[in-house]
Length: 74
Image 1 (cartoon, rainbow, N blue to C red):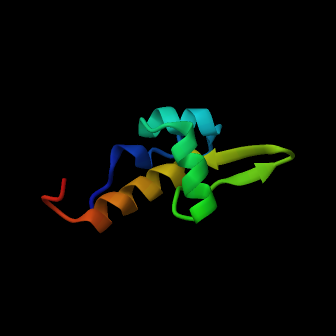
Image 2: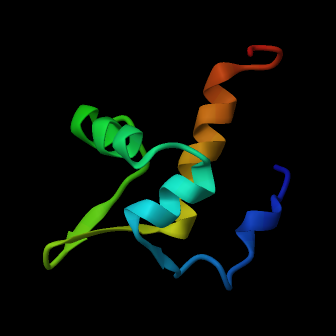
């Protein structure tokens, strides 16, 4: 299995806000909220009243999206 640059252990434990995830994915925050309702987006969780994401979970989800679309699909 190919190791990707984001497998760096120093990045795994970083907590991200929804705004930071949106910036990382270059998607609107509204899309992330919609995906959360549908249960299709990256795995997030609530701490107190705040939604947070583990950086590694977001990157793993992004890898899954790439793999599920296959090669050559726009």
